[in-house]
Image 1 (spheres, one colour):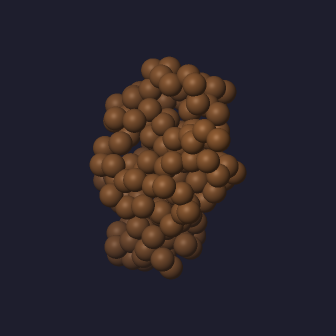
Image 2: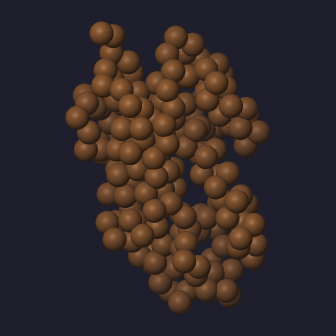
Length: 186
């Protein structure tokens, strides 16, 4: 049985608001359809590639760790948990996993962490794009429920504007209570 390469990446570690999201992607035969590191793409290009990846990749899975899990575990462990969930969501056994970064999730598959894998390996680039677009879309939905926080713009990151709004309005139940700027805003 052929072993497939699964790329894994996460997004949202540095955010003050919302879950951390990870994606796992097995591209399959069509290796490159304009993939790059998600941070080097415009929002529009990421969205177009996200649709291509969902259509052409062999398997795509998203995992997340909630704000409650982030606050109870810590952000590193919650990120690894989101990665585990993404990998298990692929529902396949014949994989080898490459993760962007230095930490490896607790999975029963061959796994290697590579720094900057999201700019070197197509499967990880794809996972990076999927995770980023999924989380950005989630923040756009949250921005409708919490219009005063400009989540559609800051995506939950600690921008100057977000920090000022947080001080003014106080945290929501979706803010990470274990993060210092949120603690200081109470």
